[in-house]
Image (cartoon, rainbow, N blue to C red; front, side):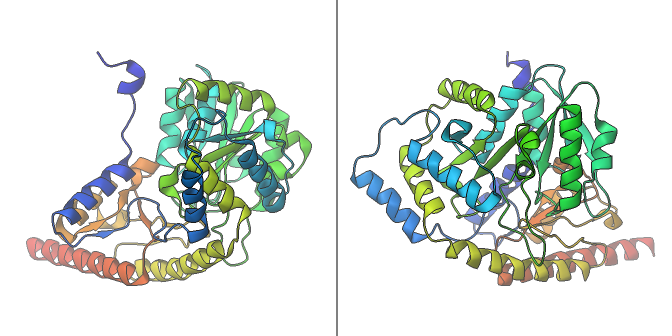
Length: 393
């Protein structure tokens, strides 16, 4: 007697693979894990000290539902400093992680019969959130380098279009929408009057000359149609602290606040003080982490393209590689399942992101671990090729 809305939810393939890999590791198996998107760095000491101070000062009670005023002010300051957008505290909501922020947005904005344009490949939870809100996900293919253009978006616009989900840099591909295309997409949103959910959780993870651009910074018209979502999880290696935030039109933030008041209430008081220090404190740890990811990005991209049967577009941002494995003749689920069972390497099937030709690898791990994983994948595919060749003989 389970409710229909829950029966229709597909479980997260990312978390399922990660859980299986960790279970094997706990059983003593030497598993190389490229699963969940989680920095392998520790939360910086100044942030942990802020949390300890909050505990010692007994800041352990309920807070306002949408976050403490000091943290909202810190978010507003950050958005002005880093993204060149002015928001007041009444236009900001703090939630229990970035995923919670995105869920709140979907539930507050989308109605039954609405359409949400979703570029492919997409992060696994977007599609499910749209469905839970009883709206229709409208899949929008990108090009061979996973690049989204305004022309692609325009083809999917109908009178029912309520929202476009814009995730740049992208999970799972690492692709970044060009500034020129972001400007064109903004014009489309204003012309057709639909919201842009701008998920900017990987904004700091850009490499080379490529820079992040917040769509809401372009002008007041598009700002009024932009719902910006972010969190401290990736930027400050705080995935377990569960602090995300949304900035957008007051009426939407108010609706989300009302929804949150009947679901989770406030985010954890202690984690809010940690997030306050993360946003206001030194940022050197972020620069160090991005530098390390850039080295890993170059290494994994080179190694993947050296493996027979695999090709990989160079990711421009985030910390994921999304190689094409179609030449192996396996579906993404078959590839992932056999790779974990036979070579003890955990990756995520691309079908969960809308493309069965690909798999996702998170390079949020050491160069040494990446090298071990690449060697195993290469040897595993060579052995399979030899086996097939012998069978044919």
